Length: 364
Image (cartoon, one colour):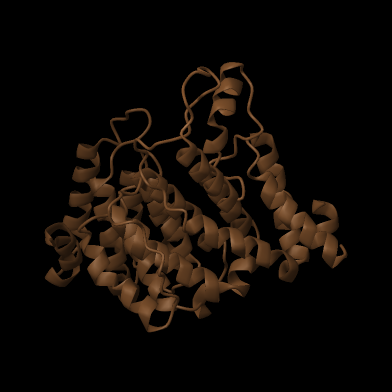
């Protein structure tokens, strides 16, 4: 399918059926199939974009509004496979049937007994589907692998991303000053898609799942070359700039990569140095390289003025980031703090250059 799809000569009916089938394969709980299905969908998207997009668009919209609520105690169909004497709650069974039908088989609580029995026997039940997070990552992996999907349909994807930032990301980032500075909800209401489907205010979202979703979408934007003419250009630029100072290293690094695709004159010459800030144990060396660029004149004054606010955000994020992986004397919070403050004390020549970092530290 992938080989034929890439040629663009596959009959339209077959291309459409293949896309729908491959998206369905992603729901099968068998990981070796997922990578192959994603590669085939990427190939189909490159050769038959107009035919494949409607199916991908449907899944992207459905998955992004399947909000990742934290797991809690919820009623489910009784496991009567183990105890046949327990009376079955018909109302609960009816509700499970409706939910199974409405979700097109994704909600498998109706078959909970069979799923548990298969698990106890060391098998995977045919009713056991992939979780929404896995399917979400796979579908956005297709968008990442076929950047033309995003560039051709940015009028749908970009407002969807802004909607995600408003109603999911800032929902878990409570009291985040960046929310009031970005004012993304005004952009949605002003010209983009405003969502009537917001998360239930009485339930909390899973922070880790929201971060994973964010990273998937950032990777898709990072794969696009030259998004300068993108819809909501200024909003994307501001979002990527803010997220480049995120405490999560992967989110910050991917945001910086997405920002670099705007080909900003003050950023491009120094990207290799800035990427070193996110490499384990290389922060101090990268700061020394940047200081050398200042002293040698490689960082001209005009670029320096524009780069300083972004640099302050990145360093502030590195300052507050937690160490991950194996412990290293070069990557402890104390070592990073000493390296960053030492660099800023020599880099900032005026109060204006020091202001962005001081503002980030003191804002409430």
